[in-house]
Length: 215
Image (cartoon, rainbow, N blue to C red; front, top):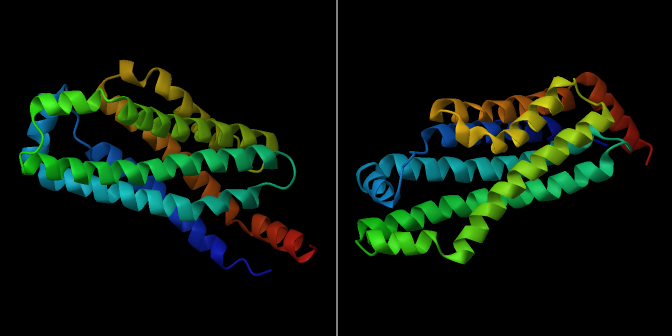
């Protein structure tokens, strides 16, 4: 079976990870609702740029996700499938968050959202559940993928360890200075780059092609 799609999917996986990293670095930080409103009003271009980058990251990561399955034969396959499903929920949530950013800016620049209105919106249960579920899906899917790669032994050991380290970092990242906290996403980029490199290596391509031709 032809594997022409694999280099493209692997490239999209890396592109998505880099876009997610760039969006994370560019996303303005705020200490409260008043500061968030000020950022949206006075840094609207940057706000919309981040929204566009996050949407691009979501699309690229979704199209790049099939790359990971070329690294699994039998060992770790079921866990890899579960991790992919959970990650995809997180990727869809990323697209939803980017659309929410655009909608939020529209409300702010038309004076349809006040400081008190923003306070009420951020404490609304539905929005809280969405944000927590989105973040949890990204980190949990990454953790499961790292464990699956460790079981499969299909990549260098540093690849799953980088993914697991980034997933675990959610527990202590809030305690770090902001630059250090944001820099932790480089672990995810490194892990996905390692997956893409291994998936497109000659050995993996031969194994994947041979396994499919024998079906």
